[in-house]
Length: 261
Image (cartoon, rainbow, N blue to C red; front, side, top):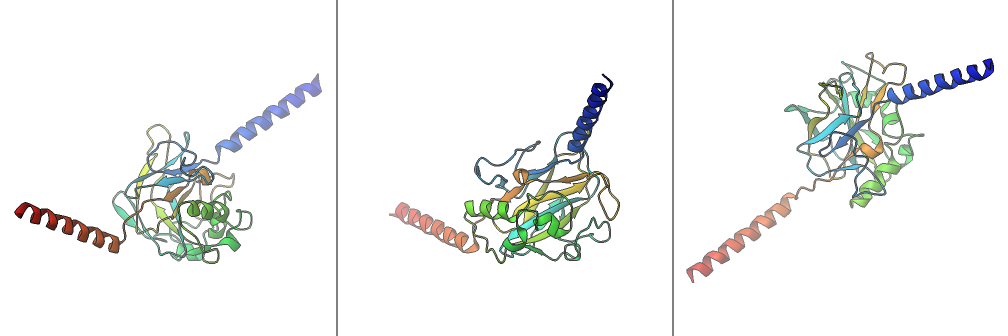
């Protein structure tokens, strides 16, 4: 009987530990308009990710009832070595590396802290075990933000990412403590401008931290691939807009001539 009771006690402790382990890894989500993790776009059944069709306002939140400390890191992966976009929150524009290296480190590599792109391609992006966006940036966490997920998703949108060039990873620090607890601010709305079509939008944070690391119990908040944003906002090129304008002027001219006739 004593052995049975001891075994039951151990099993109870293990189950509590497992439950605790599940709660100290809050999931962040990026989506067009939602207040909970959508778990992937129906338009990308094989590649997951959430399509962001309007980058002038989309949501970033933390799942369940949880809270992260400030800052919130936004990670943008721009395909084919594209230049850095601008992230806006509360009408303030942020560039890559703003305040990084002075407010926190969290293991970020120097390039990311200075606002320089860190490259993730097929060779070093792997499946997250031998690369992936987070590990290449020096951040701890899971490996689903990786080449094997990003590149096929972009391909399904018609974006071919050169496997040798890959993605330019840019990190932005937003001074916000994201919270989904009662009275919290989750989800927040951010804007993205100047991003190449097919850019990947991920997020990262900590429940507790020092300047140099997340707390030692693995309290890392991050997007997993199924709740990562993909820029699907197609903006006409300037040449296309010019042709459209010329066509409209031509139509208007014909209408005027017919009326005069």
